[in-house]
Figure 1 (tube, rainbow, N blue to C red):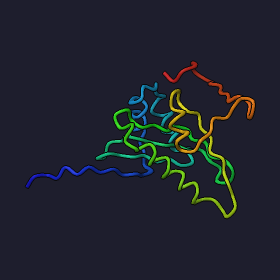
Figure 2: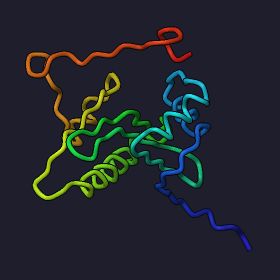
Figure 3: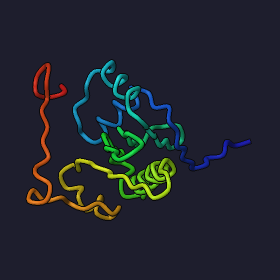
Length: 150
């Protein structure tokens, strides 16, 4: 009997550092160490991973206070799977989780930092670009080691 070649995806919350690292590499990002990635996964408020036939193809990781703010830390869709609605599905899945945590009449702010060139994708999900005049500039500072992951 021939094995069935069924095309399937799963969403779960059990991402491993090796998968996280592979997703980083799939979009050309330099990777922190496996130990640092394990810490990041364990200390994220919520993480979801999409697998295609048991292979990690997308992830979204959040920091949130369950009250007023959620920050999207990493949102990665493997280049090979971009443009197939996986990112939109994963974001909507995550947003529905966040909505499920809200008490009646509550609202929360979701913040992110878009990768260059991805602003249109985030606009399609309902995000707005905040102007420096409205909110001030977003800022970051890397500390420890050198100024890059690798």
